[in-house]
Amino acid sequence: MKIYIDGEMYDKDDAKISVFDHGVLYGDGIFEGIRAYNGRIFRLDDHLKRLQDSANSILLKLPMSIKEIEKAVVETVRQNGLRDAYIRLVVTRGVGDLGLDMRKCKKGSTLFIIADKIELYPEEFYEKGLTLVTSTIRQKGLDQVTPSVKSLNYLANIMARAEATAAGAQEAILLNSTGHVSECSGDNIFFIKDGKIFTPPTSAGILVGITRQVVMELCEKKLGVKVIERNFPRYDLYAADEVFLTGTGAEVIAAVKIDGRIIGKGVAGPTTRELVKHFREYANSAASGTAVYEAVKTK
Ligand code: PMP
Image (cartoon, rainbow, N blue to C red; front, side, top):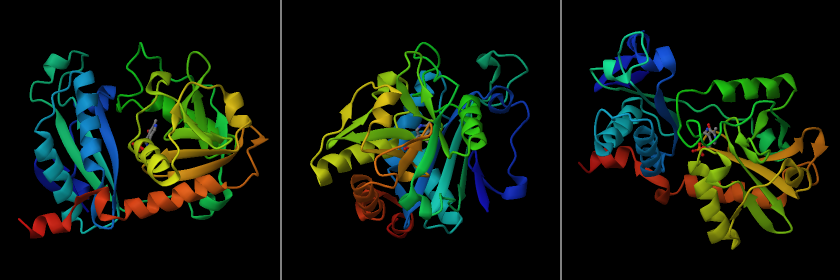
Protein backbone atom coordinates (compact mmCIF):
# COMPACT_ATOMS: atom_id res chain seq x y z
CA MET A 1 0.00 0.00 0.00
CA LYS A 2 1.23 3.49 -0.92
CA ILE A 3 0.22 6.41 1.25
CA TYR A 4 0.45 10.05 0.23
CA ILE A 5 1.81 12.52 2.77
CA ASP A 6 2.57 16.12 1.78
CA GLY A 7 3.59 15.41 -1.78
CA GLU A 8 5.43 12.11 -1.27
CA MET A 9 4.34 8.48 -1.48
CA TYR A 10 5.32 6.18 1.41
CA ASP A 11 4.98 2.48 2.10
CA LYS A 12 2.42 1.77 4.79
CA ASP A 13 5.01 1.10 7.52
CA ASP A 14 6.88 4.31 6.73
CA ALA A 15 3.79 6.51 6.54
CA LYS A 16 4.14 8.55 9.73
CA ILE A 17 3.32 11.99 11.02
CA SER A 18 4.75 13.87 13.99
CA VAL A 19 3.49 13.35 17.55
CA PHE A 20 3.53 17.17 17.72
CA ASP A 21 0.97 17.42 14.93
CA HIS A 22 -2.11 19.16 16.36
CA GLY A 23 -4.23 16.61 14.53
CA VAL A 24 -2.81 14.02 16.93
CA LEU A 25 -2.59 16.23 20.02
CA TYR A 26 -6.01 17.87 19.72
CA GLY A 27 -7.97 16.32 16.87
CA ASP A 28 -7.35 19.68 15.19
CA GLY A 29 -8.06 18.97 11.55
CA ILE A 30 -10.62 17.80 9.04
CA PHE A 31 -11.19 14.81 6.81
CA GLU A 32 -13.20 13.29 4.01
CA GLY A 33 -14.24 9.66 3.49
CA ILE A 34 -14.57 9.08 -0.24
CA ARG A 35 -15.29 6.05 -2.40
CA ALA A 36 -14.17 4.95 -5.82
CA TYR A 37 -16.44 2.78 -7.92
CA ASN A 38 -15.23 1.03 -11.01
CA GLY A 39 -12.25 3.34 -11.52
CA ARG A 40 -14.10 6.59 -10.78
CA ILE A 41 -13.86 8.66 -7.63
CA PHE A 42 -17.41 9.23 -6.51
CA ARG A 43 -18.38 12.93 -6.45
CA LEU A 44 -14.80 13.99 -5.79
CA ASP A 45 -15.67 17.61 -6.62
CA ASP A 46 -18.35 17.65 -3.93
CA HIS A 47 -16.04 16.09 -1.36
CA LEU A 48 -13.37 18.70 -2.10
CA LYS A 49 -15.91 21.51 -1.82
CA ARG A 50 -16.95 20.19 1.58
CA LEU A 51 -13.28 19.92 2.58
CA GLN A 52 -12.74 23.55 1.59
CA ASP A 53 -15.82 24.64 3.53
CA SER A 54 -14.71 22.70 6.62
CA ALA A 55 -11.21 24.23 6.31
CA ASN A 56 -12.54 27.80 6.06
CA SER A 57 -14.84 27.18 8.98
CA ILE A 58 -11.99 26.20 11.31
CA LEU A 59 -9.47 28.79 10.01
CA LEU A 60 -7.37 26.08 8.40
CA LYS A 61 -5.37 26.92 5.31
CA LEU A 62 -5.21 23.95 2.95
CA PRO A 63 -1.57 23.22 2.01
CA MET A 64 -2.34 23.31 -1.71
CA SER A 65 -5.06 24.19 -4.18
CA ILE A 66 -8.21 22.08 -4.61
CA LYS A 67 -7.00 21.18 -8.11
CA GLU A 68 -3.71 19.89 -6.67
CA ILE A 69 -5.52 17.95 -3.95
CA GLU A 70 -7.74 16.41 -6.62
CA LYS A 71 -4.63 15.28 -8.54
CA ALA A 72 -3.09 13.83 -5.37
CA VAL A 73 -6.25 11.82 -4.61
CA VAL A 74 -6.39 10.44 -8.17
CA GLU A 75 -2.66 9.62 -8.08
CA THR A 76 -2.96 7.80 -4.73
CA VAL A 77 -5.76 5.58 -6.02
CA ARG A 78 -3.82 4.98 -9.24
CA GLN A 79 -0.58 4.05 -7.50
CA ASN A 80 -2.47 1.54 -5.39
CA GLY A 81 -3.99 0.00 -8.52
CA LEU A 82 -7.51 0.21 -7.10
CA ARG A 83 -10.78 0.46 -9.04
CA ASP A 84 -13.12 0.12 -6.05
CA ALA A 85 -11.73 1.84 -3.00
CA TYR A 86 -12.34 3.68 0.22
CA ILE A 87 -10.25 6.85 0.35
CA ARG A 88 -9.43 8.77 3.48
CA LEU A 89 -8.26 12.35 2.94
CA VAL A 90 -7.03 14.06 6.11
CA VAL A 91 -5.77 17.60 6.67
CA THR A 92 -4.37 18.37 10.11
CA ARG A 93 -3.29 21.70 11.59
CA GLY A 94 0.31 20.46 11.33
CA VAL A 95 3.27 20.42 13.71
CA GLY A 96 3.07 22.86 16.61
CA ASP A 97 4.01 22.96 20.27
CA LEU A 98 2.07 21.50 23.19
CA GLY A 99 -0.18 24.55 23.48
CA LEU A 100 -3.51 25.25 21.79
CA ASP A 101 -2.28 28.22 19.78
CA MET A 102 -2.64 27.41 16.10
CA ARG A 103 -0.12 30.13 15.19
CA LYS A 104 2.58 27.81 16.56
CA CYS A 105 1.89 25.36 13.73
CA LYS A 106 4.30 27.33 11.62
CA LYS A 107 5.00 24.89 8.82
CA GLY A 108 1.32 24.75 7.95
CA SER A 109 -1.11 21.92 7.60
CA THR A 110 -0.31 18.27 6.91
CA LEU A 111 -2.27 16.45 4.19
CA PHE A 112 -2.36 12.70 3.82
CA ILE A 113 -4.36 10.29 1.70
CA ILE A 114 -4.97 6.58 2.26
CA ALA A 115 -6.64 4.48 -0.44
CA ASP A 116 -7.70 1.06 0.72
CA LYS A 117 -10.10 -1.70 -0.20
CA ILE A 118 -13.61 -1.04 0.96
CA GLU A 119 -15.21 -2.86 3.88
CA LEU A 120 -18.97 -2.91 3.74
CA TYR A 121 -21.99 -4.09 5.64
CA PRO A 122 -22.60 -7.70 4.60
CA GLU A 123 -25.07 -7.85 1.66
CA GLU A 124 -27.75 -9.51 3.85
CA PHE A 125 -28.13 -6.25 5.81
CA TYR A 126 -29.43 -4.58 2.63
CA GLU A 127 -32.32 -7.09 2.66
CA LYS A 128 -32.84 -7.50 6.40
CA GLY A 129 -32.15 -3.89 7.34
CA LEU A 130 -30.30 -2.41 10.31
CA THR A 131 -31.21 -2.10 13.95
CA LEU A 132 -30.81 1.39 15.46
CA VAL A 133 -30.92 2.78 18.97
CA THR A 134 -31.09 6.38 20.15
CA SER A 135 -27.82 7.42 21.76
CA THR A 136 -27.72 9.14 25.15
CA ILE A 137 -25.18 11.49 23.55
CA ARG A 138 -26.62 14.71 22.15
CA GLN A 139 -25.54 16.10 18.83
CA LYS A 140 -23.24 19.10 19.15
CA GLY A 141 -25.19 22.35 19.08
CA LEU A 142 -24.93 24.82 16.22
CA ASP A 143 -23.25 27.25 18.62
CA GLN A 144 -20.37 24.78 18.99
CA VAL A 145 -18.14 23.67 16.14
CA THR A 146 -21.09 22.68 14.00
CA PRO A 147 -21.56 19.03 12.97
CA SER A 148 -21.43 20.28 9.36
CA VAL A 149 -17.65 20.56 9.79
CA LYS A 150 -16.16 17.13 9.16
CA SER A 151 -13.59 17.56 11.89
CA LEU A 152 -11.18 15.02 13.35
CA ASN A 153 -13.11 15.19 16.64
CA TYR A 154 -15.22 12.06 16.28
CA LEU A 155 -15.26 11.01 19.91
CA ALA A 156 -18.98 11.71 20.41
CA ASN A 157 -19.78 9.66 17.29
CA ILE A 158 -17.51 6.83 18.45
CA MET A 159 -19.17 6.79 21.89
CA ALA A 160 -22.62 6.79 20.28
CA ARG A 161 -21.60 3.89 18.04
CA ALA A 162 -20.29 2.01 21.09
CA GLU A 163 -23.72 2.41 22.70
CA ALA A 164 -25.30 0.92 19.58
CA THR A 165 -22.90 -2.01 19.63
CA ALA A 166 -23.56 -2.62 23.34
CA ALA A 167 -27.30 -2.73 22.55
CA GLY A 168 -26.79 -5.20 19.69
CA ALA A 169 -27.57 -2.50 17.09
CA GLN A 170 -25.53 -1.35 14.10
CA GLU A 171 -26.09 2.41 14.28
CA ALA A 172 -27.03 5.09 16.82
CA ILE A 173 -29.34 8.07 16.30
CA LEU A 174 -28.21 11.39 17.74
CA LEU A 175 -30.91 13.80 18.86
CA ASN A 176 -30.06 17.48 18.94
CA SER A 177 -30.54 19.87 21.87
CA THR A 178 -34.22 20.42 20.98
CA GLY A 179 -34.86 16.68 20.91
CA HIS A 180 -35.17 16.48 17.13
CA VAL A 181 -33.47 13.76 15.14
CA SER A 182 -30.23 14.98 13.57
CA GLU A 183 -28.31 12.05 12.08
CA CYS A 184 -26.57 8.80 13.00
CA SER A 185 -23.00 8.32 14.20
CA GLY A 186 -21.74 7.90 10.62
CA ASP A 187 -24.79 8.27 8.37
CA ASN A 188 -27.62 10.64 7.50
CA ILE A 189 -31.20 9.52 8.09
CA PHE A 190 -34.44 9.65 6.03
CA PHE A 191 -37.97 8.38 6.57
CA ILE A 192 -40.87 7.70 4.25
CA LYS A 193 -44.52 8.21 5.21
CA ASP A 194 -47.49 8.00 2.83
CA GLY A 195 -45.25 8.39 -0.23
CA LYS A 196 -43.45 11.47 1.13
CA ILE A 197 -39.75 11.40 1.95
CA PHE A 198 -38.25 13.44 4.80
CA THR A 199 -34.77 14.18 6.14
CA PRO A 200 -33.51 16.64 8.79
CA PRO A 201 -32.31 20.02 7.48
CA THR A 202 -28.74 21.32 7.92
CA SER A 203 -30.05 23.44 10.80
CA ALA A 204 -30.85 20.25 12.76
CA GLY A 205 -27.06 19.86 13.12
CA ILE A 206 -25.93 17.36 10.51
CA LEU A 207 -22.99 16.59 8.35
CA VAL A 208 -24.30 17.55 4.93
CA GLY A 209 -23.67 14.13 3.44
CA ILE A 210 -22.60 13.70 -0.16
CA THR A 211 -24.67 10.50 -0.33
CA ARG A 212 -27.61 12.40 1.19
CA GLN A 213 -27.34 14.93 -1.64
CA VAL A 214 -27.11 12.23 -4.33
CA VAL A 215 -30.11 10.38 -2.86
CA MET A 216 -32.14 13.59 -2.80
CA GLU A 217 -31.32 14.03 -6.49
CA LEU A 218 -32.26 10.40 -7.25
CA CYS A 219 -35.56 10.74 -5.36
CA GLU A 220 -36.46 13.67 -7.56
CA LYS A 221 -35.16 12.30 -10.88
CA LYS A 222 -36.02 8.62 -10.56
CA LEU A 223 -39.00 8.55 -8.19
CA GLY A 224 -40.44 11.98 -8.97
CA VAL A 225 -40.52 12.79 -5.24
CA LYS A 226 -38.91 15.92 -3.82
CA VAL A 227 -37.41 15.18 -0.41
CA ILE A 228 -38.75 17.44 2.34
CA GLU A 229 -36.12 18.80 4.73
CA ARG A 230 -37.73 19.44 8.09
CA ASN A 231 -37.19 18.86 11.77
CA PHE A 232 -38.88 15.82 13.26
CA PRO A 233 -38.94 13.90 16.53
CA ARG A 234 -38.22 10.18 17.01
CA TYR A 235 -41.97 9.54 16.89
CA ASP A 236 -41.91 10.12 13.11
CA LEU A 237 -39.33 7.36 12.72
CA TYR A 238 -41.34 4.94 14.86
CA ALA A 239 -44.48 5.68 12.83
CA ALA A 240 -42.73 5.65 9.42
CA ASP A 241 -43.44 3.26 6.55
CA GLU A 242 -39.70 3.03 5.85
CA VAL A 243 -36.52 4.45 7.35
CA PHE A 244 -33.18 4.42 5.59
CA LEU A 245 -29.67 5.73 6.15
CA THR A 246 -27.20 7.17 3.66
CA GLY A 247 -23.42 7.39 3.83
CA THR A 248 -20.30 6.85 1.80
CA GLY A 249 -19.67 3.43 3.36
CA ALA A 250 -23.27 2.24 3.77
CA GLU A 251 -24.60 3.82 0.52
CA VAL A 252 -28.39 3.49 1.05
CA ILE A 253 -29.54 1.00 3.69
CA ALA A 254 -32.82 0.32 5.44
CA ALA A 255 -33.32 0.61 9.21
CA VAL A 256 -36.05 -1.77 10.34
CA LYS A 257 -35.88 -1.71 14.12
CA ILE A 258 -35.45 1.45 16.18
CA ASP A 259 -35.36 1.45 19.99
CA GLY A 260 -37.14 -1.91 19.98
CA ARG A 261 -39.94 -0.75 17.61
CA ILE A 262 -40.40 -2.55 14.30
CA ILE A 263 -40.52 -0.10 11.39
CA GLY A 264 -42.96 -0.83 8.56
CA LYS A 265 -42.89 -4.52 7.73
CA GLY A 266 -39.58 -5.11 9.51
CA VAL A 267 -37.58 -5.64 6.31
CA ALA A 268 -36.12 -3.28 3.70
CA GLY A 269 -39.17 -1.59 2.14
CA PRO A 270 -39.94 -1.19 -1.59
CA THR A 271 -38.87 2.45 -1.94
CA THR A 272 -35.62 1.88 -0.05
CA ARG A 273 -34.85 -1.11 -2.29
CA GLU A 274 -35.53 0.94 -5.36
CA LEU A 275 -33.23 3.68 -4.12
CA VAL A 276 -30.47 1.14 -3.38
CA LYS A 277 -30.76 -0.05 -6.99
CA HIS A 278 -30.73 3.48 -8.45
CA PHE A 279 -27.84 4.49 -6.23
CA ARG A 280 -25.70 1.52 -7.29
CA GLU A 281 -26.47 2.11 -10.95
CA TYR A 282 -25.51 5.75 -10.62
CA ALA A 283 -22.34 5.00 -8.59
CA ASN A 284 -21.09 2.67 -11.29
CA SER A 285 -21.97 5.02 -14.16
CA ALA A 286 -19.61 7.39 -15.97
CA ALA A 287 -21.49 10.39 -14.54
CA SER A 288 -20.66 9.60 -10.93
CA GLY A 289 -17.22 11.11 -10.59
CA THR A 290 -13.60 11.62 -11.58
CA ALA A 291 -11.96 8.95 -13.75
CA VAL A 292 -8.71 7.61 -12.27
CA TYR A 293 -7.17 5.65 -15.11
CA GLU A 294 -8.67 7.33 -18.18
CA ALA A 295 -7.57 10.67 -16.73
CA VAL A 296 -3.97 9.50 -16.75
CA LYS A 297 -4.12 8.04 -20.25
CA THR A 298 -5.35 11.26 -21.85
CA LYS A 299 -2.59 13.40 -20.32
N1 PMP B 1 -23.01 11.92 9.20
C1 PMP B 1 -21.83 11.64 9.77
C2 PMP B 1 -21.63 11.97 11.20
C3 PMP B 1 -20.81 11.02 9.01
O1 PMP B 1 -19.63 10.75 9.59
C4 PMP B 1 -21.04 10.72 7.66
C5 PMP B 1 -19.93 10.14 6.82
N2 PMP B 1 -19.65 8.81 7.05
C6 PMP B 1 -22.30 11.01 7.11
C7 PMP B 1 -23.25 11.63 7.90
C8 PMP B 1 -22.60 10.70 5.67
O2 PMP B 1 -21.89 11.58 4.82
P1 PMP B 1 -21.39 11.12 3.38
O3 PMP B 1 -22.60 10.71 2.62
O4 PMP B 1 -20.74 12.32 2.81
O5 PMP B 1 -20.46 9.97 3.60
